[in-house]
Amino acid sequence: MALRCSVFLAILLCCQHALGFTSTENLVCGRVVGGTAAAAESAPYIVSFQQSDVHYCAGSILNANWVLTAAHCLTSKSQVLSSQLIAGTNNVNGAASTTQKRAISSYVIHDLYTGGIAPYDIGLVYTATAFQWTTAVKAINLPSANVVPTGNADLYGWGSTSTTSVPSYPSELQVAKNIPIISESACVEALGSKGIDVHSTNICTGPLTGGIGICTSDSGGPLVQTQNGVTTLIGIVSWGKVPCGQPNSPSVYVQVSDFISWISANQK
Image 1 (spheres, helix red, strand yellow):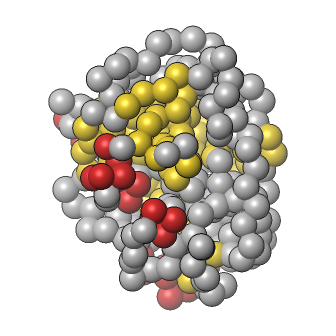
Image 2: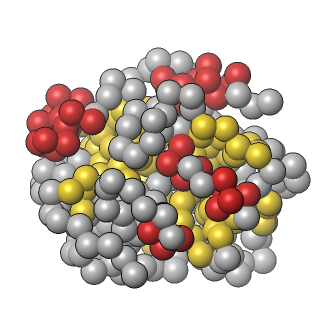
């Protein structure tokens, strides 16, 4: 069912092929590569986007009614409006007693997003039924505007752990901790011909030695930093190469600090 991809093909990290969509880019589904099972309630802000109980993207809770995700997760209106947001559980099946499920009422895609692998890959989802705050369901903090993150970060997601063209899907939320943020120039150089698609509003992570990174269905999920006990959303999973986790294959995210005004203005 999955479409085949060459080693150097950059892909969008979503599951459109599984839902009957096509694209000029080959798409596959997958999850965090090189991670480990996340501790319970270690990422209470993450949600799974599911249609017919199938996970295809992730997002981060901003407040009781709004979730931040990637625009490419929202390109099919029928898919989005027939999906549920699953919060409060590390198990993708949503079986935990702490699970909260919410219908999607409406959504917003950035006006400058042109589809496919492109900048401005950011969107907001609204649920009319507010999330209830518990130890398992909490909002994420946003960074200050225009701050460029440096150092290391943590990546959470439910994507393939495989570094081959054959996916492997864990049922539990995965985390890759302390992955290095790399410079835009290093990211562009490592991606070769696909480096032209890296924009100033993106952020990239390594390591360029491979073994760790985003994979498909991690789309829309959080890249975070924690300082002094405060966890901040610095990136939204956007795109990368397959097979995932190969050397010189950085992960590309939306840099959240560049969109603080947009996020505020579009929660209407």
